[in-house]
Image (cartoon, rainbow, N blue to C red):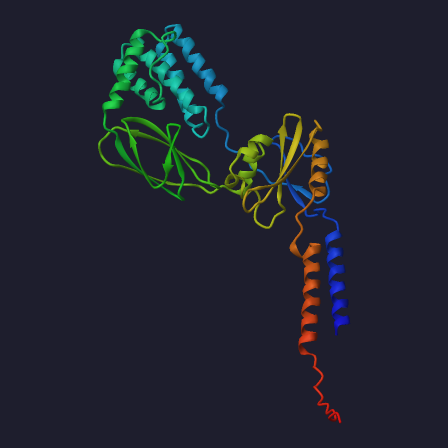
Length: 366
């Protein structure tokens, strides 16, 4: 029985060695998330496919809003104040479509300050005061306006608007959303829903964000003491929409993105997605876990051409060391073999019959 146990243990160790020494090459198919507006190499590497992508909704660029602001400023200098205000209205409408972008608050601030200049030039002090209030609410940390750019009259009106905000009691806005979302008000994070916002009289821009849902933009005009309530239903993003957004990210931008926003790139059960993004000295590919959104592995190449970089990156990912399952680790089977031997020896010596003691009678010495 002991010899049989040793044979079984040796077989387990041999199987473990074979499983542990087998190749670690990852042969599963990949779904390639290629850069936006790029042409996929033909043919694609073996066992790879491109992800279906849906381009995000087009929003005005910062450059286009900036161009409208500069045009309005030229009109102001040419004393065409009403034409300048019309151009600022168009610039604000474009900027409010960009509320999810970080630079939008600065653009809106410039629009309101320039709007105040136009209204003061037209002797409309009430409208100028409203515009300065909006600028002060967007930049609560700003002490005053630059003397090199604004006249004493404008700076005094701004200080008056800022002082009024400091003494006014804000109104309560009860905000809810489905699902729960993080909220920013006028470009500043304020918490997660449900929450109560304290807002001053005027126009406020709210952005609701939740992982795997499209950001929801709301512009609220607060002008009454009545209790305000706002409920927002967020729209779930389709995988093709998420993929379209990720395809426009460079490698550093993808790495900085929260994992929750990377999740859901492709439907469950599909091949794991590989994001191919630009970096300073070439391209980088990141293998993404569709369930968690975590970056499992990343490789880079210095190939400048995308059609050359994609095959190289895919082969590098497949040749990278893989984390073997437990049943393919040599020490797992060695431990099982040792356990089998120890158990067999224990049973053998514990259960075998011991020889019965024999009574020996010796004659007494004479």
